Length: 115
Length: 111
Image (cartoon, each protein chain N blue to C red):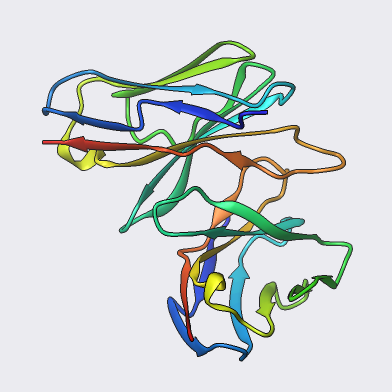
């Protein structure tokens, strides 16, 4: 398996622009997670889906952020409009959510820079 | 919600020495505690985990201990090697899905 796939790997955009991050989970995994990592705030869970349904979005910073999972093999995280404070590494992760394993497999991340 | 605190923030050891990283959590309902290793510029990867019905778990040179009463858990790495140098994150979860991560410990193993 190729593991969790994220695109793009790097994104540089100007403040006010729309940014869309993409994720393909590991085939057969039924849970998908979006994280944001910054030096100041560490690794934060933004939202997670189970069987394509959003379960907990309490970590989404504000209405500028939205996430979708239209099918089991694809998810997007959108920021509109983007702001410099959104600069971070965004990770997507997937898991089978037990009971034999609760390991979350992380993708390579998207490094977002908003100028 | 859960609050996970991790110490120390940086740790430097000589190759061959042991390293210990400690975490505390606030939610007594948390029952799953994974540890992730993140090498520079790479993704976090699970190295070991423990569930609340177990007090200790070992996997070769790494071990994790859990004290539910005190709400703290620790990662122990023995016979450290330069390739152990990375940032280590602890996490706690009550539902096996929503992980609350600690702030990370940067471990430097000096050859």
